[in-house]
Amino acid sequence: MVSYLNMSMQTLLNVLKKDGKSEERPSAFIALGEISRAVGTHIKPYLDQLIAILKNALNVKTKGYCLQALTCVSMLSSVVGPALQKDIHEILGTWHTILLSWFCHELL
Image (cartoon, rainbow, N blue to C red; front, side, top):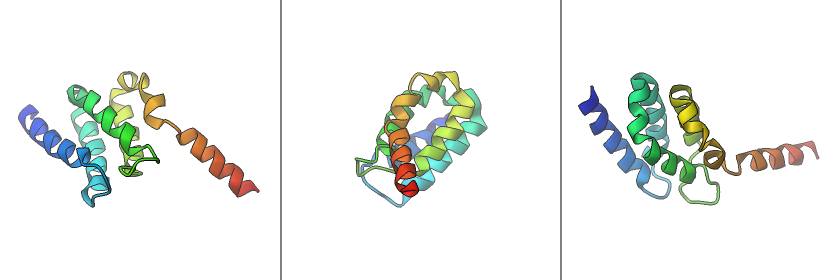
């Protein structure tokens, strides 16, 4: 399993490292989340790379922004939980501000 995991992860990480909006990115984020749920803690060696990619993908100010990354964070956090806790505020960045602004705008 580990050799297939490594091969799969390298392929997905290469897709996700590309800047910009490619057609594969949303599916790759969902696949990463699903893989993390399937392999459990075996995903931990890839965590640092994933965190860097997720930070970029959830930054609305970059051209690499991808909403499916939020789903990936959710699935990943259910597997690695505490290992992701120290980075979760930075990963989600300004999401709380964006959602609050949107919510206030809708109320007015």
